[in-house]
Image 1 (cartoon, one colour):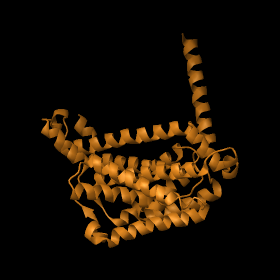
Image 2 (cartoon, one colour; image 1 turned 60 degrees about the vertical axis):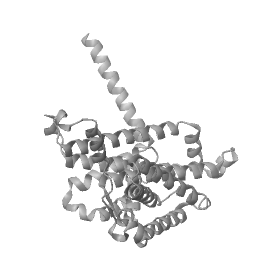
Image 3 (tube, rainbow, N blue to C red; image 1 turned 30 degrees about the vertical axis):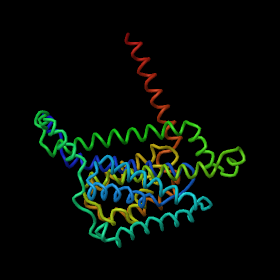
Length: 325
């Protein structure tokens, strides 16, 4: 019964949705301080290549590779964040986009290490490694009525789901903390925030490093879910794709990029006949959203409206239940 419900293809699409949601959160963090960064594709590549090379060449466990890739991406986030503090808007976007391209060119030209444009294959697969480990302890997916590949994709999906929920929960809590309020103050008016005693340098670099950490983490997961990466996976189009998640969904609240990543990952799968034109569609989305709704589809007002509707519906059902009693 369970085997009939589980389709590996749908689970893989759902896994990529979750990775894109993590990437959407990564750009939301930097945007929450008013910094428009397009370096997340580069950070993602650093996380992916670091984890892939460590697990391929040194036989390190996947979890160690993912942690190393995440930390190295965060370190690069600090190194890029400090010298770009004085840049804002389009100037910051151009510099960070250039950083991403430099990283991609290094991947292409460092052939002895990265295999150049061909990319790295045979990267340890997260789900298969987990299955082999469990089999050593006597576990067989047939106990659950599943084939091996069904268990592999189900395990990946559940791991990514847990990770994604944890990341969203952490940054929602951060938004309500002193750090989140400092981010919001800097975004509203940097000079006013500084006059109130907020350490602008610290919080802007912190946001940049957090965004890089999350993007690097998503990249490391991507490498061990796909088992193959190439420089093309982290090129200019990836940076634009990550930005679109926030532009389309909204950058005021964390649910904006989450919705954007969900919708824009599902759309090419549902409408496969237009998937080749998705970057043209993304360009149109940017133009339309900037002209009609620059804050994105989901903002604070939309969330408050949804909460009010839900509250009224609950009160209505509560009243009708009392009458029926």
